Image 1 (cartoon, rainbow, N blue to C red):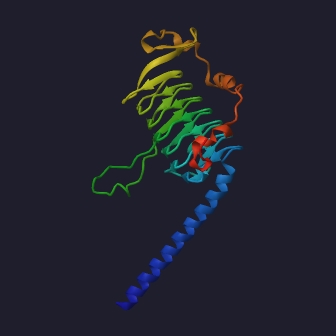
Image 2 (spheres, rainbow, N blue to C red):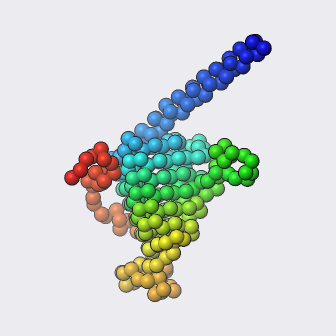
Image 3 (cartoon, rainbow, N blue to C red):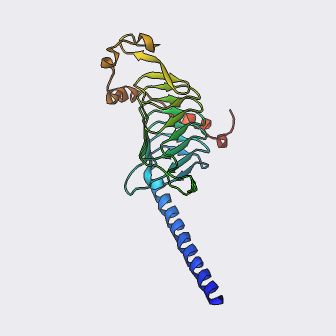
Length: 246
């Protein structure tokens, strides 16, 4: 019996050692990827936690605020599962959990406590602990350029939000949103569209049937935005208490 216990202890010790080495290796590789996958002049608060740096890419001149958590559930080699574009400001305590992928377009702005739920736990059987059942990977979330998400917005998997859209505070977005829309509520509903001919926001009920034919392609829209000049460093003070008060 003593020999059995000794053998078991040895096996557990060896297994624990291998697990520890694996964790250390992943941390080293993650640190290397972190340096490679963050664009020039971008800032991530030290409190930001990223699980899966090899699958995360952040563009230039972007800010990720304090206490944000980025979780890549399925870490496939040489694949970016979460992309944050250029000139983005990600508010405090945002949460990203990726299934297939999450893409945040250039110039996006998110308020505090926004959630991007691209993956959930598998629940095929209630007799398997959900904490061990694995996570889904079929869901994708895509946010177009220059979208503004107010405080406490939730985006569910499978949703695409068109460029230039505004999502009101506490909105839950379950369906696709066309470009240049204003969405509020739970579930989210479109209340306004931007009329390209009138160059004004109008009630969605007044939006012309052929209105979408006058929309710019997103690449053309980005060309307009890229003519804007600003310095994201001036906005960093809003990202963390580390920068103090004004």
